[in-house]
View 1 (cartoon, rainbow, N blue to C red):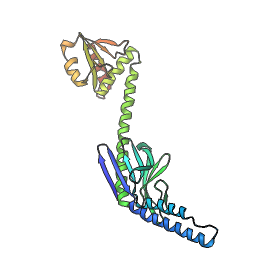
View 2: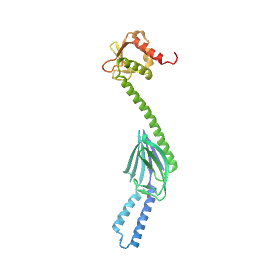
View 3: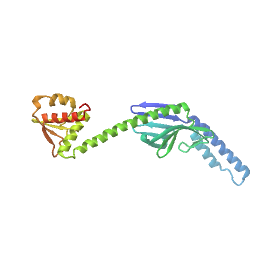
View 4: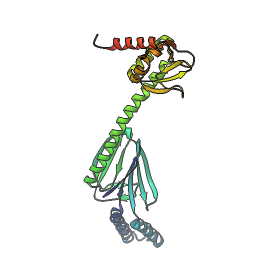
Length: 279
């Protein structure tokens, strides 16, 4: 059985190997004793060393009574596969980024071995497999198919969420870069592009210094305040009291297009009319 814990943005999935280790270690112990007996019987020269035998049996018994388990920790943008022995020593750790995962599937194998947990079996082993662009990783040992379905559902949902969020973030990042690039244009071209961007984004940033206004499509100063485009249109562009107010549009630290509020309204309306399909 697996244990699933959810805390804030992290999900922890643990698969214990306590029972499996006992069976495997008994098999290994039996094979070692059998080999020693056969060697002593057929090859009298190979005398069984009591000290080596005691040490070997001691090491096996330590593993026999210890608890080993595997753990998947799902983070914000990656998962961490770990194998732990004796409840504390991490003997295997692998970080897999969510956008690297190509496929998650269930697989059985005969006489499988896991060097990370030092566990071996002469039976059919059942693993959850995580295939990436670089390598395929395994989780679990004799994992139930029902448990596989639970883990698979959690991982697939997390990968989908991450990829969807990444697409949105990439679009936002690309858009920010596009907006930043506008400020490298000449005054006239920059002015038109910024007005188009204000219409697209449906927001702008504004500040008032003395009797003049400063308007931008990105926040390039702490003095700028974000405002909804339609609120700006009603509260500023449509009011006669602001008609002759000077507005500096798209200031890049050196220059910007200076117009009156009425001219700004006229240019914005023209751009909106040109875009309209109802002419």
